Structure formats: C-alpha cells, structure tokens
Length: 145
Image (cartoon, rainbow, N blue to C red; front, side, top):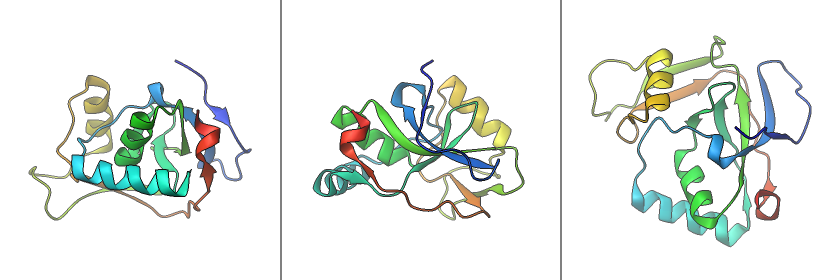
C-alpha cells in the first residue's frame, strides 16, 4: 500500500485533505458508464478536480466520488484528491437513495466489508451524509500524475 501525499495538515481530527494513491482506493458501489463519460469530460475540460472524493481513513473505502475515481483512472492519474474522514465519527451517517435497488439500509460495517471483498452494491445505493463541512478544494490535473 502506497502512503498518501498529505497536501495540508489537518484542521480538525475528523478530516484531512490528501492526495491518495489511486491503487489504494476501494469502491463500494458500481458506477454508471454514461456518468463516467460526463465526469471525464468535465475534468478534462477544466484540467482540474474541484470536489475531492471522500474516503474512510484506514480502510480506504470510497464513500463519495466513485465516478470521479473511475474518470481519473481512465486518464491515467496516479493520485486522487480526497478528504480522509473518520468513518466511525457520528458526523458521518449512511442513508439509502430513494431509488436504491436493495432492501434495508446498508450499514457502515457492511459497506466496508463488501468493499474489501470487492462485492459492490449497485450504483446509487448508499448516500453518505457528513454534518461537518468539507470544502471544495481545486486540484490541478498536473498534481495527480
């Protein structure tokens, strides 16, 4: 496992910004091919990522930003801008999208377990809500290769 490149020091023990090696990231949901193309075009046109993904620190599970990760992977990026969060913190909660194709609410534990096993939920199954503000942070593509 490659260590993340921390781009700034943590302001709050709950979250910190870092450039995460793309190979460390574990998705927990499938992606929608059409949406990847849209995100890929947006990132390419702007030559930057405006909204970092959100990752559970320690387990490297992607909580938000699966399509950004896949778009960056297709571009050949080595790193992804991310907010690393304490997934056990009460500031992070899990909801189910209204159109989710599963019964019941996925738990944090189930999300991490499935991600580690590579058993992905359908797209737009879980919705992670974070009560603390994670600001946008523009990252030029040049910093990701």
